[in-house]
Structure formats: C-alpha cells, structure tokens
Image (cartoon, rainbow, N blue to C red; front, side):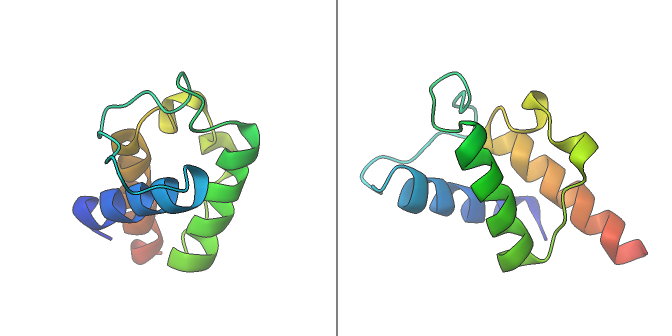
Length: 88
C-alpha cells in the first residue's frame, strides 16, 4: 500500500462512515482525536475496517494516540505495517 492509497482510503472511510458527509475534505493534518472525529469507538471501527478491507492487522501496541492523531499519521502506520507484512 502506498501512502497516497492509504490517505485516500482513510479519508474516504472517515468522511463517508464516521462523518457521513463528503462535502468538506478532511485535511491530512487535521487533529482527529482533538476534534472528536476519532473516538475510542470509531477508532476500533476504523481498525476493523482496515483489517477487513485491506488485510492489514494493527498490533495492540501500535494503537496509540500518536498513530491515530491525523490522517497522515494513520497512513504512515499503514504503509509501515503493509511493508512489514510483505517482507514476512
């Protein structure tokens, strides 16, 4: 998974499923946790979506605020994890 693919997938999911609107695009650096876009529940739902739609498992020790703070940080994590799983 490339960074652009990850950004597009995360943004699309957040806008369609979490916010229910595609009228305004979420910026890469928008503070998702601070703004309440991601809560504990929506974060778990996003993780489940990533696993089912993209086959990327996020280890429990990687589920920390800094990895889910922005679309950019989530995309970076997904690229890193998809690269790791490709090497195994």
